[in-house]
Amino acid sequence: QFGPCRVEGVVLQKLWEAFRAVKDIVQAQDNITGVRLLRKEVLQNVSEAESCYLIHALLKFYLDTVFRNYRRKAAEFRILRSLSTLANNFIVIVSKLQLSQENKMFSTWESARKRFLLFQRAFKQLDREAAVTKAFGEVDILLTWMEKFQQL
Amino acid sequence: VPCVSGGLPKPTNITFLSINMKNTLQWNPPEGLQGVAVTYTVQYFIYGQKKWLNKSECRNINRTYCDLSAETSDYEHQYYAKVKATWGMNCSKWTETRRFYPFLETQIGPPEVALTTDEKSISIVLTAPEKWKKNPEDSSVSMQQIYSNLKYNVSIYNTKSNRTWSQCVANHTLVLSWLEPDTLYCVVVESIVPGPPRLAQPSEKQCVRTLKDQTSALKVK
Image (cartoon, rainbow over all chains, first blue to last red):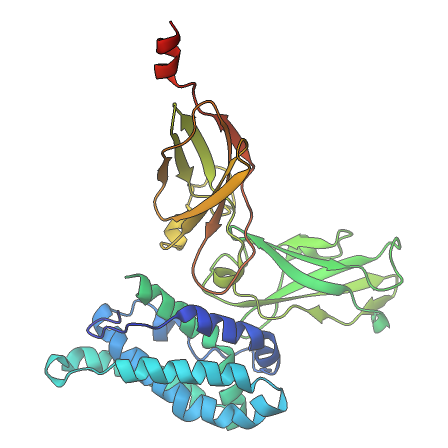
């Protein structure tokens, strides 16, 4: 349940296992340890109402930008399987996050968009390849946040 | 006078041992220097921030561990730590941990387990483990407050039938019914939270005997 969006049949455990298999490899490639993309200002105190918009924007970004641009490196480091598991599950979640137009509250959407822009701006300030690697290395932060909403 | 960096091999196997948010950095002495009077210096780093920070209590120490619980107490942050060895005028390069995420990696200790029994049932009361605290007089924080989805895996062993079964429970009380009278049962409990797999610490095995069947006792009279 992400606020107004209900998502059924998603097993986060598979995502955890997929990321755990690659965590050390991916995070070891991130040399810009002085930057955290999914900072507290992005994910902390997100209201239930905002959560659907934010999770949709983040997962779309991960699919369209992070996973897509990391494929070559994933093949190089032989971690394509984990990348595919994560990507396929993100596709399933995004497809189920259909937000009907009538309950799209503009103020909530705007607040969620600001949070996403904080993340995206930090991403764009880095070299492209470094940013993609860093974002992939922060999937544990993203899953932790998603897990908390799954309990509500 | 600065030491000659790289004059010593690096310490090895540097890791965080984390239980209920008590986060201890530990490492092995450099290869070939076991038993030699080497000293160690530790620094830590908060992912997303800018500089390495000193831990004054772990500067030039002899032991091969350092308690960084206070420094890593914000469990939603991620951390790195590093250690170097010094011997005389020589010192090693730093050796660094991988990224450490207390919220996902701390081991959840076992709950406290209280058992009471009657003829055919055993009541189990579980108390969630406490989070590490800096000072004993500080107020306690239960790990349940950090992990609201904390559950327990209760394993029960019937010593007469040699049978074991387990149940996953979310609340703190559990009554095992339809047991055999006058039988010794042993119970072990582990705390579990969803998320990435993590090591579990089982509770001490506790055994209780169900009471004799009073009805059969009356018939005998």
